[in-house]
Image 1 (cartoon, helix red, strand yellow):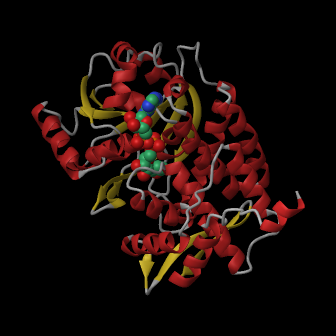
Image 2 (image 1 turned 135 degrees about the vertical axis):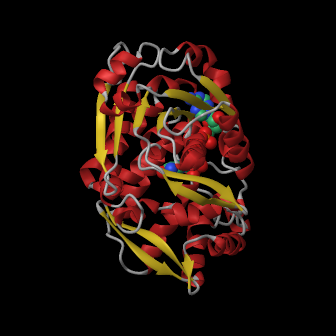
Length: 391
Ligand SMILES: NC(=O)c1ccc[n+]([C@@H]2O[C@H](COP(=O)([O-])OP(=O)(O)OC[C@H]3O[C@@H](n4cnc5c(N)ncnc54)[C@H](O)[C@@H]3O)[C@@H](O)[C@H]2O)c1
C-alpha cells in the first residue's frame, strides 16, 4: 500500500467536504513519482499541471532529506523556500517574510501553487500563508511526520500561534492533494512517532471499538519499525477523521469532537513552553477528560482500561508532578485565555466509550479536581520503623 517500489501513486482517500471542495490523498514513492504519473492518477494534480510550484519546506526536514527533495521529479524544478523548524514557522513574522519572498518570486494567483513539505507545524504555517497570498493559492501537502500524515494534513485547518496561545489565528484552506511517503518516518525520533500514534488511537477511540482495537495493535508494531503497520495505521486514521471533515469542515458541529484531549493539551503545551510534545499533551488531556467524565458519572465501565491500553500501546508516560493543585491552577489560567471559554466554563470533549464522546461545559473546580487526580504524584513510600524492627 505504501507504493515504495511503485512509480504510480496509490489512492488512499478522497474527501468531498461540506464546502464542495475535495481533498485527494495518495501513497507514493517520492523518488520515483513523475508529474505525468501523478496527473494521470489524480484529477487535482491534472488541474494544477499548467501551474508552477513553489515549495515551502521545514529547514530541518530539508537538512535531513536535501538530496531526495532536490532530486524528486515533482519538486526539482521548483523554487524552494526554507521555513524555520517546527513551531517557529507558525508565527506572523515568518508568514510575512514568506509572503514577501513569494511576491519577490513573482508568484501569481492563477499561475502558481504551493507544495508544503514538513510536519504539522509547517503544514499549518504554509496553509496559512497560501490562504492569504492573493486571497488563496492552491496547496499540496507532503507530510513528513506521522502526526502530520494521520491528522494535520486532512481537513484544511491552518494557523499561527499568537499571544502565547496555540493556533489562535488561522483560516480554513483545504489542500487539494496530499502525497504520503512513509519513507520520511525513518528519520523521526520515537517521541515524534508517539505523537502521531496518540492522535491515531484518539481518532480510533472516537470511531468504534473495532477501530480502536486495530489502532492499538498497529501502534505497537509501528514503534517496532513495521512499515506495513504504519501504512494501515495512517490509512485508518485518515478514514476515521474523514467523516468529520466531510460533514463539518468549518468545525461548527461534530468536528469539535476531534478536540478530545486538546483543551488540556493546548494548556499543557502553553505551560510547558514547547517542552511537552503535542501528542504527549493530548494523551494527558485525554486522561483529564476521562476523569471529568467519571466525576459526572458518564464514563462506561470498560473505558478506563481501553484508554490505558491504547495509550500504553503508544509508549505514552503520563505526567506526574509534586504539586498538582498548582499545575491545575496554571492550566486553568491558560484554558481561560483560550478560545474555548465562556461564562467561566470551558468546553471539554468527554470520552465516554469507543464511538461515543460528547461535549461538556466544565468549571474550574471540576477541572481542578480531575487534573489533580491525574497529575498528582503519589507520596514517596517511607519505611516504617516497625518494618525495621520486624527484619
Ligand atoms: N491542521 C490540523 O488539523 C492539525 C492537526 C494536528 C496537529 N496540528 C499541528 O501540528 C503541529 C505538530 O505537528 P508535528 O508533530 O508534525 O510537529 P512539527 O511539525 O513541529 O515537527 C516536529 C519536529 O520534527 C521535525 N521533522 C519533521 N519531519 C521530520 C522527519 N521526517 N524526520 C525528522 N524530523 C522531522 C521538524 O523539523 C520539527 O523539529 C502542531 O503545531 C499542531 O497544532 C495541526
